[in-house]
Length: 141
Image (cartoon, rainbow, N blue to C red; front, side, top):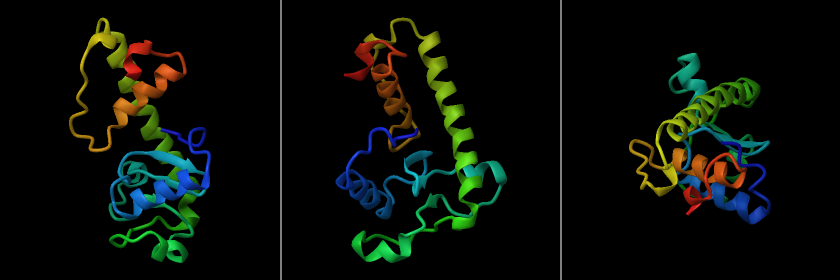
């Protein structure tokens, strides 16, 4: 999910960096700013396990500000390829969300558990889809 439109302040960016540094927000393809993106798209699509799932070029300089276990960041030179791969993965996930909404009658009246995704990517996508007018308003609650 591209979160750049929702991350508006330095405090928002610092909160995202803190979550990333603690390992809570790194697996799903979230683009936070132009210089901060997480996701497994590059490793999955290119079969490059261990290449890195965090694009944060200033990580080493900021590491003391955001404590946590060491992160395996992607080589900044691979940033464009990292973004392309994560965008492909985002499109797959957005397709899942579209399919869920198309095939479940009155989805706004249903309870939703996002099994297998610890940071609720699909639920967040549904919520943002509501704000964009793609899905019923009752999904955003």
